[in-house]
Amino acid sequence: MLDYGMSVVWVGVLMVLVPAFALSAYLARRKKSMWLVFLIGAVGWIVALVRAPILQGLADAFLRSWIRSAGALAAPYIATAVDSLFAGLFEEGIRYGLVKKIQRTRADLGHVLSFGLGWGFGEAALIYALPIVSAVYLQGGSIPFSSLLLGALERNITMVIHVGLTFVIFRAVTGVKFLFVAIGTHFAVNFVGVSLFLLTGNVWTTYLVALVVALILVGYAHRLTKIRTNA
Picture (cartoon, rainbow, N blue to C red):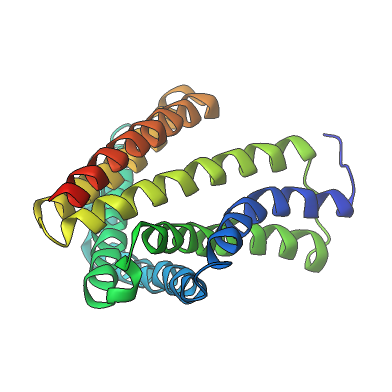
């Protein structure tokens, strides 16, 4: 594979981090409190990472042997379903708790958007940007530019999904059933996306599903905000 050098690593990182940050900066030029909401969103995703040690503990206790007993064919899908369920429960549960308890996060639609952007930014910074910079600068590895582009595409699609889910959670403040809509959507995106990759070995099928979900969520979120505004 062709390595484009360390400087190009920052191009990939910036393609992920700049869009969300730039939009947040544009929003915050009128309301400085949006920076605080953006930060709350980023911290919220970090808090949701608590599921990692819990999953590890469950796996060590009984899930690992149970999943293995399902057989080599089914085990990866069961493991994916468990991880997807925990991701939906923890992320949407914590997102709901923050939006419900911190009034500023839902002061207006701009603040809701900033919260969603911060959530996606926090995830992108920790699971995409930081590992890449660490692998190249600290471990002396190399990453082809094509992989950086694919990663940037996936992260930006995920960012849109997080924004859409944040608006669903915003609606859940006055209608708790929407919390379950958000959890179910989060679970489905993770499970279907990873399962498709396991089945086909083609990352583009996963990206296509994620893109379709992102577009549907944008339309659904727009509809929900109109209903909330008119209520």
